[in-house]
Length: 150
Image 1 (cartoon, one colour):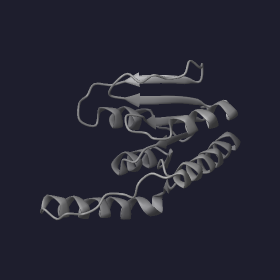
Image 2 (cartoon, one colour):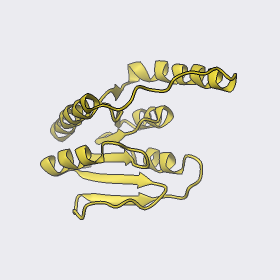
Image 3 (cartoon, helix red, strand yellow):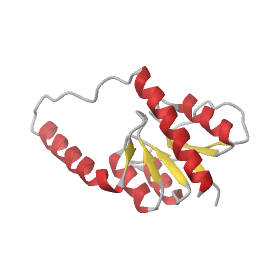
């Protein structure tokens, strides 16, 4: 199986960076979304539009994830499913989800959800920055090189 980049594309802020790495390393990209997205015309890019059902995009990505894939997502439960399928998972800010970190990420997510449900006013993540974009580009390049070598 060839290396592949699977993208949870609806709210992904780093599509251009993904294309740059994919084109440089000649790695296929599958963008999965609930609605049609305008993509550059390129043979390495494909798009899957799923129903707008709850978690439909996540379910599709989890079904096609494999050990030679990297899944780009901010969604912690999807990252866990990708890791269970043997794929790598990377946040758009360049921080990887790992077997060691996913449990804590799920626990933190559950606590934050409980706090929000209880009416607590809590802040969201910090704004997406140029440094995040740069870190993502470096880390995705690293992961793709690793996948191509394995």
